[in-house]
Image (cartoon, rainbow, N blue to C red; front, side):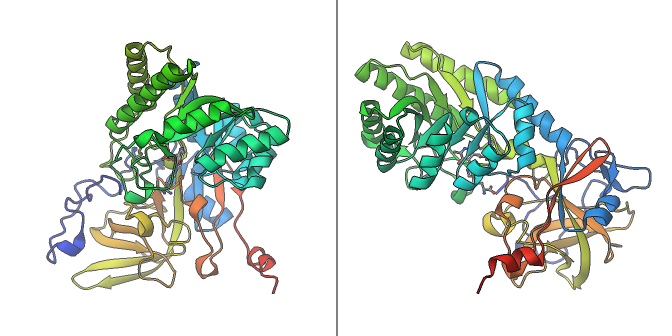
Length: 463
Ligand code: LLP
């Protein structure tokens, strides 16, 4: 799903005749800063450290597998996004990428807003003290109970996703004696160049209301007539792990066009547009993500230009990066359990986690890199597939990578760029216990989400 080529050139071992894998050009001990969080480095003994702490110490104290999250990097990325967009725009962190109470507090301290898409995310945000007016509530099928909770809490906006929801939110707000600020999510008809399951603005999918055929214009008409709603803007999200700004530009253009049509028909200039999230990150060194300031400039320029030509005042822009903030800030630390060389094919390295802590490889064919982190090694590189411990041959963490050929059981290896959509999509498949999230900062490590225990599993099993 990422655009990476394989480190050694061709990507798929399966299409190559035997023995055609060439050793990687780079020294396996060298950490590529594109895929590792900012405070990661190797110490004098060759072991990886993060936030000033050696990974072996983390493994000893917290066990493996574990997600290790670099708090200073997370905060720095929040600041980079909010500085890039400035005071005329709003950055909403997309909580679905990874959410916990600590994350909510960091967001507040760094001045970001929060986008939630379920009752559970909303509960976490409110519990950790996020002011409700800084929360946006998304989802294509919010339940009545979720809407009631969001409206009574006073969330800053609800993003309406269907005609039924327009009526539903209006009714609930009216019966609670309030007027809810809302945006309407439109599908702009852009084919984002990403995996089919995470592209969201082409017409044949479940999200939003299509611009095509006048559906979105009709949704606006209805929302403007209902007393329970204060329609403040239009929302669009075109997909995820996108590198090319062209899709965002088309989307911005179409949304501004709709604002102009709304002005012409209703005499109302909606004050906000939200262009969603979806900015890609580097999963492997070949990926080349855009910096927040480039993204802010590209989006700001296009919206300003389109508004000028339509004679509209520039609306307040918001964006919703999830992966681009948390993705690069964490790695998953595993211990090597078994090593199985398959003659003429590759070597299978089994770790103590797998598809229960990172489903993205199996689900989206996502590419990751991996490094030996408990020590350095000058041994020859060997072609490996890093797999988990689940009862499924698709249980792959890293499909094709090189690790040193002296790799041994007990070594620690780490897969970088697992901050987004790994813990949040983790499962208990095979009754696996979901790993903890350990936050490190300035020489201190602390658990922000603890490891599941067998008691946690059995507590739910009430038969
Ligand atoms: N805003 C909306 C309305 C969204 O639906 C999403 C992601 C985001 C923002 C944040 O997108 P981001 O900046 O994180 O790409 N599980 C998939 C990704 C699904 C994304 C769903 N919506 C994955 O692992 O790649």
